[in-house]
Length: 280
Length: 306
Image 1: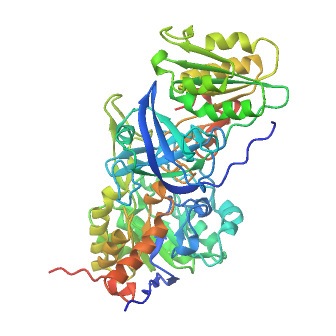
Image 2 (image 1 turned 180 degrees about the horizontal axis):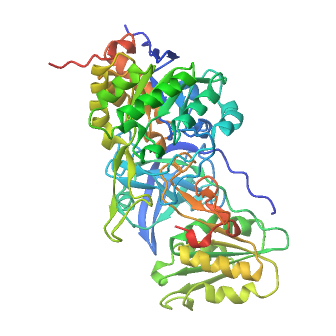
Image 3 (image 1 turned 30 degrees about the horizontal axis):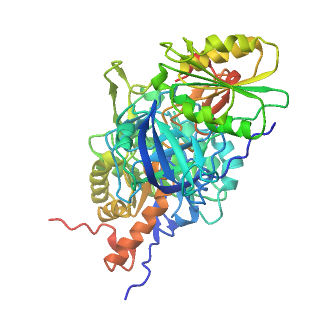
């Protein structure tokens, strides 16, 4: 489990919407993926654009980066075995509001899979996955991959309340050790994910931490991990126009004052590379 | 009875298999787009602007979406001319003309980069990015002062034997005057337009959307402005013009040809669809077939108006 998965070459493809339904904490967009559509490695993302049907759509102009939640169909999730890419999102602005209006049968243009995936744990390390809010979506494929490989892992998910815990049923179905934390105490620990995380970090066994969520959460997790001497990988979000390294819009600052592109050099970064105080 | 239309043009002395180039800063160094697009489908591409030394650019946020457009203030981050020649150019497939975009904060720095790129294999021409603040002249863009622009073009012309295209700033009162200055100083062609200076505000935070404050507007929002300016340049000079600004379809490109452009550049459209430039070339061919146009050259300047 020590090597990162080599990502497939990205493609641009128009995918048909199978469903786009609200559920706990998010909307689940299910897109029918042709056999040629490459499976995303854990941590990779796709760019989704609202013009798939050949009619040029100029407003909103840009695609939106979203985590590739999972690819189904090789298994048996869909009754007819159709290969589907699932994406979980929340309505946060005009782009996602219009995406939420998409109906089954509509088409969306996708570019992906993109970005550097999560590196796998070294032998002897236990993986600790910490997800917050919409960042939970970025961690599912990693959890599934680790479980399928028989690698030790623990998952810690946090959200504002029980109703905001997206993908909870998916994680529960994996059957991996799972802890919850909510700001209002409606599920799991009452408070931040860092409270249940902290005692794990000091227990003495080698861990590798993976985090995706709101910036304050990721910064807190990274600082705890660094203090305890555990490697920590953060999956960042940022505004980006292209997703494949040409617009240079998604730069973040490194500790050495250099700039990294979230799309090309990330979205997964070793927390030690980043200037945590300057994250978007 | 339709035959395949002839899409070939000659722009600024550079033979192109079709009029479609890509705009500097929207196509990286070419190789980034290769998973999505065979570069040989294009007339050529304009690489990201190069300075003598590598540059890091502005802190984030650097981009913002606007109605039918986007703002950017990257500040010309690039690998520098040496790394471009050593590391980026070798990856470009043979037979794809590369136009290197050149940029500097002083005239001498532009000229140095022009000199360095002259004679480098695959570099078919140079495009001078005149939308840079002229440090010695108090920060006004070279392209906003006829005098500074004239001196810049003269120095670059003396520094290279390559075809020399000048990309004009739209942030001027009379773009025709700027085009005439370039022609008078020996430029081989004009590219018009660069981004339109603009501002977007986040009213919740009462701050500009970009860390830099001002940015450059691109995308379909600026296409009619670019068309107008290309048309005005075409009336003013006899050197060829490359139309740039909001092109995302074959029809968009044809509009620029009709207004007098010999070639066009696809810019922001490549961000949302990395195959866009190839689709624009296909769209031009389809337009020609639909209208019985045997050669795309028939369209250049063929706007009918009274």
